[in-house]
Image (cartoon, rainbow, N blue to C red; front, side, top):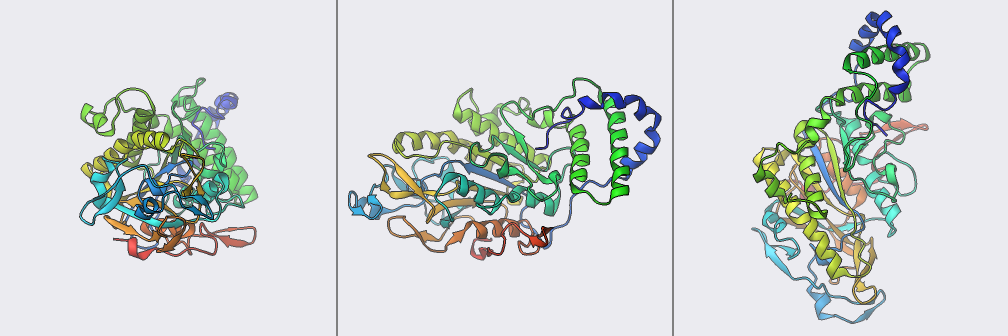
Amino acid sequence: MLKGAGCGFGYLALAGLCGELFGGRAAAAASAYQSPLTPRPSQFPARAKRVIFLFMQGGPSHLDTFDYKPALKEQSGQITRGGRLLPSPFAFSRHGTNGLWISDLFPNLAQHADDLCVLNGMHCDNPAHPQATIQLHTGSSTFVRPSVGAWVLYGLGTLNQNLPGFITINPPTGLGGAQNYGSAFLPATFEGTKVDGFGISDLRNRFAGPVRQRRQLDLVQEMNHDFASRTGPNEQLDGLIESFELGFRMQGTVPDVMDISHESPQTLALYGINGRGPQSNFARQCLMARRFAEAGVRFIEVCHPGWDQHNQLREKLTQNARDIDQAIAGLITDLKHRGLFDETLIVWGGEFGRTPAAQGNDGRNHNNRGFTMWLAGGGAKGGLAYGRTDDIGAEAVEGKVHTHDLHATILALLGLDHERLTFKYAGRDFRLTDVYGKIVQPIIA
């Protein structure tokens, strides 16, 4: 995982004198270096410049959030193959010009109904958390593959050379871990940078100031480039070179981008930042995502855990919704105010949904055969409910969108052809969608 400049620089202390002796050659090599993160043109005209992926870890219940099923209430208590049907304990109402059904759990987000493109026909291959989470992030549940953020960065580069192009805030834990933001066989340059509540680890160098760090780095890069010229292309070495260079540049940029203390009281109130607790924590992360997006980061993920409601559905889902509702609505509003919404694709959802049948008295089990995600901004058609599950929400039956289709569509909105964005590895060309996936054209504005 890419870390800050302090990581790996301790052993460079001995290089200072040599850096001064060979500084001329090293500086020339450094100036000739071409970063693999340099922005690249899209393959066709893009609708979005960046992605903010809001990952709800655990599998939100579509039946209690964005997929209204009155038949569940009519058939309450009936026994099916999956068990006893459980109606939603939450009320639904229509919102926006087209009357999107949204649960009353989301009063703030409902005000943006005309911005939401709700995919009610989502489905994936596996009902287990680790496999479904990894597939959502990488396209595969069985092999180690690059994450979608790594593919986007590989295809487009990034807009700010002093920041990582792919950042994951509070990434999912225990469900594939770093694999969800890893680069796998892509060069290490394209893997995600982890940001937690304490920022980016090892960002500061405790042993040397900027001038001495630059001399040390120039020497090491000179030796790296010399080695590469003698041995030929080396992706691992390229990733190491870029990691050192980016880590050095990040020291002067990242702290300012992550510092929200200069935001206005009105902006903090818009997101719901008012102290401590899950709601304010997620709100800070959403505001940080906006700041990273505004600063030129290409792909940002924000994770909110705790959506695995096998019991206490009413209580836990109410808390989950309270944690995210105002913050996400604030993010949409803030992006609009800054002229960023139309070029920023927001993706919301979890690894799967929940069953219409009850688990215990007040819970739902995993359901990968039908669930909901939504998109907003970045060329997605607002005010649209696309696809549907059957009358009780057990399975997608119309407008079905597989994870591969979602990935193909995200890439298309960024101006990338999922069939042409490939990387040669182990003798064949790989892509994010493997040999599957189709662009969901009806949801593109």
